[in-house]
Length: 161
Image (cartoon, rainbow, N blue to C red; front, side, top):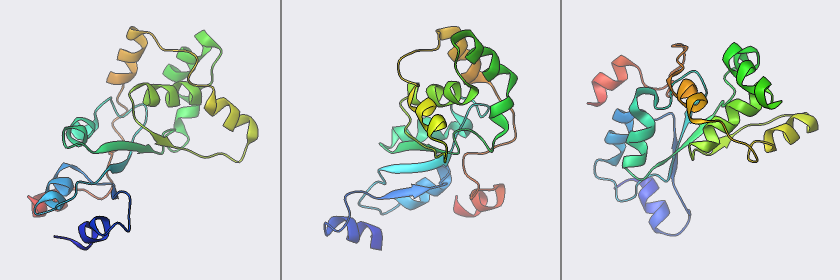
């Protein structure tokens, strides 16, 4: 039993969430836990494939909602040629295509902007869709430079297992 379990079970929290947990961190956390985290907030965006390191499917198999932070990468997606091409077909920005792809997968996301125009564009991701071929291209797209969990390395996974 953990302090988080006790906090939740006492009614002081409506849910427990974790961030940057890889599969082995989740497995370790769940050993002896009475409460499964509701959310695992992870780095997730176009260019990481649809299920980086199997973490999306693993989280869902446990009833944990994966939530995307940094859904636009670290800015590199604004000039991504694949996103530009897919957006040009619909008159959408690269950001709109990237955010739409995540939301269409049923993954909530967190993003921010200081620009009212960008916020309006971010909301305009629901009234259109990518086709199956376009979605498959983005699902398989790997830039190979990001991991969903910065906290888990080969060393930490070895220690946790």
